[in-house]
Amino acid sequence: MNKSVITSVSPRECELIASGRQTMLVRKTRPNLETPFKVYVYQTKHNGGKAIVSEVLNSVYGGGKVIGSFVCDRVRLCIPFGLKGHLLSQEVYREMCLTKEQLDKYGGLKTLYGWHITEPKLFDKPRELGEFRKPCNHINDCCTCKEAEFQYDGDELRGLICKREISLTRPPQSWVYCEPIEEE
Image (tube, rainbow, N blue to C red; front, top):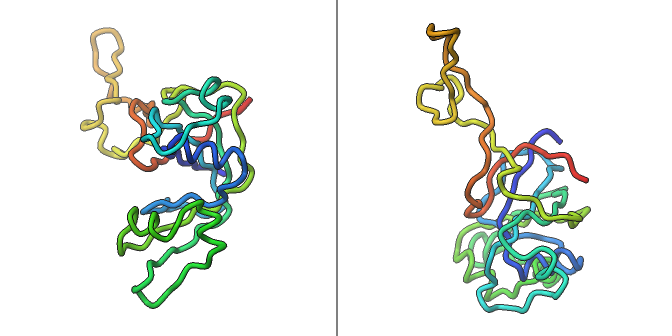
């Protein structure tokens, strides 16, 4: 797997994924990657009062860190009822750990994507967001990139050098492409 993504996940969902109960993560979009691809899980800092996070996840991992990963081996198209007459089975709702009402509230009448979760893994030690790098999106336009550096030979300008990878400084709203990291 060459490219990966990092996705923000609530503490409640982190617990469900770690326990193996949630086997499909619902998102409004999907990466332009062929399956399988690696997904790093960033645990958000709050749980919105929806559930009490297990003692282990809360004390060891807390929030605001990348706590683990999984492999997405397939992406399912989740077309809401009313569009093309498509119904999701009760099994799919169980895989998502959502009710029809929760799914409708999240997606409305928009098509959603179910990322199938395989090989879930909790890291021994949570990783900082800054350890992850996203690919540069200023390809062939380094002059507009804040990460590009001018290279000098003494006082003479030799050129503009792009680092091509940028450290993540903010958690993704949903998900963002990132480079794979070495796992312990």
